[in-house]
Length: 389
Image 1 (tube, one colour):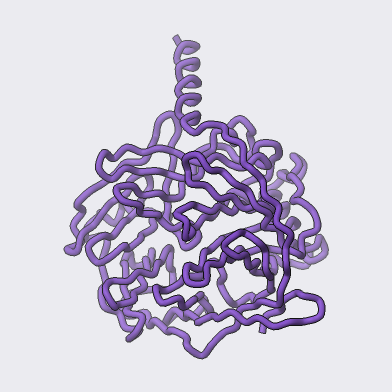
Image 2 (cartoon, one colour):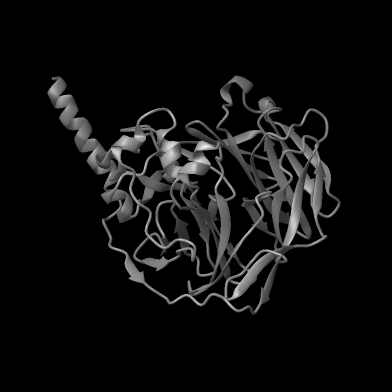
């Protein structure tokens, strides 16, 4: 009887994770043309003062616009509150105590929140997504998949929900091993949720590099954005390529390699996984990639690259990689790259409807949140490589 159950379970796993065909990516290599492009900080910064019992323990935030208004919504996990600020006045206009809508003990440290508008607030907690209305009442819930394995969903600046008609797409994380190839082959990175039928599907497998080699926990934080063609563009930490797809029939790969990275990212050996810090050390000693953003006004991609530390730096206690931004045009041609100061949180970049670009800075301020206005700066220099100014 146990054998029959095991066979049935394995067959269910096969059907569950085979809904996406094994499509081959068409790879396009476009010769980079490095120009001196960088990001410069302007004086037009924002300061959002934390009021009441709100803390700088922001689990998620997002920009949204309603009419002529621009807003930022922040989820503070310490106070279990969602705080909405008007960007023009930089004042708090609404504070929602989420434990009045959902029991506090049911909310976890992994809860994330996304505000589409004042009448649609999405909250993900564990294996359920809640939709709250203007009165903060739960008007709908959608359960994530639990059979044959649990698959969690989440919101983030590098993994924003994509709301297209009656469907919503968001980041998916299956409860599978990151060190077993048989589990990695089953991995999917995107949820497709039908808001009418509440049906959920899993889309987009990991790139071939992940199928062939092991990288460990820290190399699984994928990112995506939606471009001006209505296609989704993915970035993966262990892959120099970026991937564009309509999630149906078109699957294209383009080079998104940093000029500072001369080789592909090496796999992590089993010996390197030994010990509590093994996987983290292996990650720090390798190059990697992070979020990818699309600037809809300038039709430009911004991909964050991380540059490995040395063994000596690791022994001396360094635990942060230096970062740079790779700039690509809307045809995926690399047109520049620049390093940036460590105090700018590149992972928090967002664009307003009129084209302004912001990112967080001074993240340790306990009394408020700082967002700096960034602008592109392009100049010609001798080596063609940008440097931050």
